[in-house]
Length: 137
Figure 1 (spheres, one colour):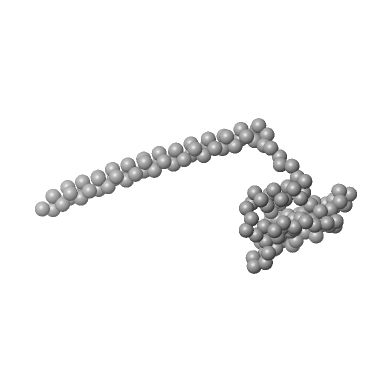
Figure 2 (cartoon, rainbow, N blue to C red):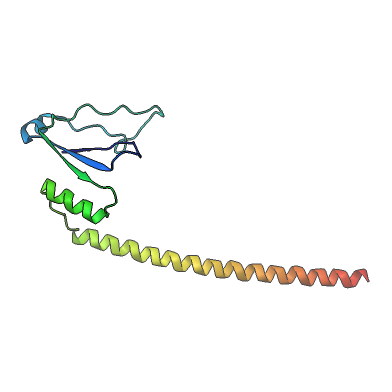
């Protein structure tokens, strides 16, 4: 299965899903995508032409529809089954959330310390200015 996109922003927002038989899909090498491989040149990447022949297509009108609605229709059309995260992945997500919270606390602490340092420097600069003004009199 492959999904094609259009860059025409004025046209309809339609997702076209191309289906092929399993025999021809097994014979066709995977498409090369510039989003999954390192690009060593700044030249435009040619579209892949290694797609398997399409047996049939299905379309989903996405204009003014919520992403959950589109996903639901995509899952229904393709008979796909959502994959639940493993316990290891859930643990990683919890760890990342904990790191984000700690990072946020550290950032707030740093802001408070920097503000206190600026206030202290401003008071010292003001005191130096007053001492210098009394010497000039």
